Length: 130
Image (cartoon, rainbow, N blue to C red; front, side, top):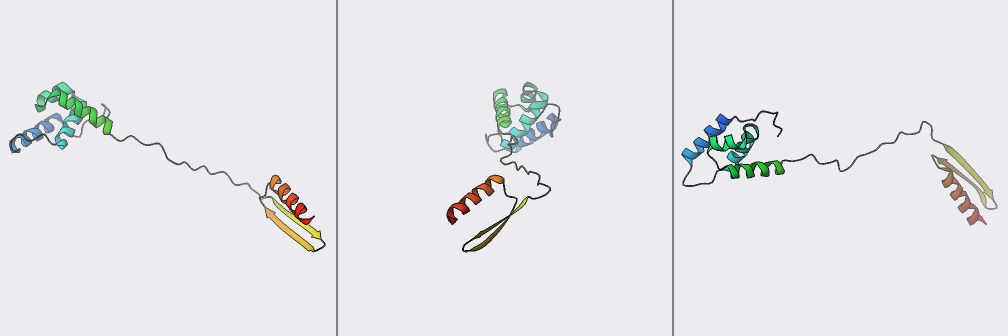
């Protein structure tokens, strides 16, 4: 979280939540992850030293939680697929081939065919006819 954005929870609110948790906890229960997340958020704005003092948590633990939260924050993934759409030509080339042989006539109509395709098709037709 950038330092320019104010935290969602102020230091005073975090302090009140920690105090409420301390009064209601049973035994020596560990600080819940939710409270650590709040403490890390406040520490980004207020600083680790002040936050650890006010919330009465160990400085090193708070610093580690801040580092872990920064590493775990989701980073936008690069797109897995980008579709490129080519513009369609204004007019589709059209070609008609008529062949006449001993056995009959053959008429082939082609739309949007390349010159190399027409050359290959003509060669194969001539070779098969002879």
